[in-house]
Length: 558
Image (cartoon, rainbow, N blue to C red):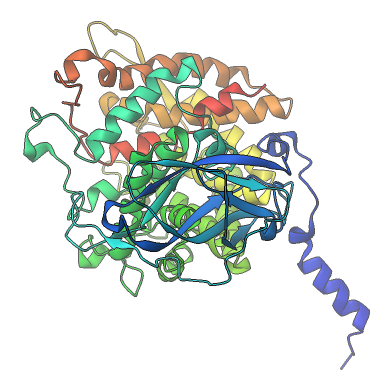
């Protein structure tokens, strides 16, 4: 047998590690996601005690995310109280930024722990400083859930979830720079997004049943018992509203939702609110909400929950085959999203490899579809029988709005991988929407000619053109619009702007505004300003606001 020399072994190791050793991104589109690093500075944070721990000495733990390149050594993070006094703290690194992100190796999320006594629940402003060694250190270490308190209200079963004794909220501008859900702008920063932001706040209240007494109880959302409100990741959606608002109420509800979701995950990774035969449905398998809660509270018990869920992402036939079983862009999306988020949460290279393989499965289907499928459309063609599309079983179909879910997952994967194929995939999806994915509908006397997305379409223009329900299609206009916005961003950054995409954006934007207009109309609030409109179906909140949060940021880039 031929002996393998030491040099050959070293070369093999280097080649295997090459993606992780790659330098900073060279693509202007990828580089454009990251702001310049600030290696020294300070951040005001709002500290709020749970009323159940007032007057007690407690251990406080909170998570603090950082933008890439800001700080690498946890010893260079310090905390100062509302009187300006440095506090003894312990800092543990939860995650570091991976290659090829600029500033790779720097801290992405840290957990800060300290002892304190709070005499009032009135919020206090503390200051975190980074860039110089701290003087005060806490030598003890505690589990992240130390001194957490049981929640006995909030619409959840008594004792089902717990909360930190002290919660820390961060400014929206900081959260956006930390790229927790990609680059984001704070709510109400841009007049062009005012309608979207007002609708986000309105529907958030409806989603947590903070509504007018005029809304009948039967229209309230039973999120403690019904699986439907969790579809498209209710917890992650609440976190995204927090990232854009910086509001305590959004963070508080996001944490509760993530903890309740985790509490309903069994040892086998199944979601307990689903019927027994569907408990492992991949479109209900979420890591993103757990990732956000882990990074913002330091609750390490969520790692075990995520580990239980993770096998779902590679455990189905995500490589589409015409003679295979059930397959949709939605399932592909949540598999890619989950595998990517699990890699971010744990650093497990196997999870990154799974994410890459899932992306490659979608990319191959998009760029080189099976024989007989329409080619060059930009979408992911599959037979209607795989999609359970009645009457379209033998037609090649694509779903514009489910493709938006896939784009969302691709963008998360792209952020931490820099995989340039995502750029082409996103631009091709945008052109698919512009050329094939929209139609005109006469839906209202005051809106005789409305542009709406198809719900499901046969992109080759065959005898079965599309599944047309303009009212359902209209409800998906916001996320389909985001597909166009993202495609336009990549096209402009790479010097290949697509006029068809820009024109489609202009056509579809009035429909997006129409979707959100009811939230700002006075007759849809009572005298106290509380919402009177139900969310029907409740999952609508999640598909509207989790996927589309970056719309105004991408549009603002030159």
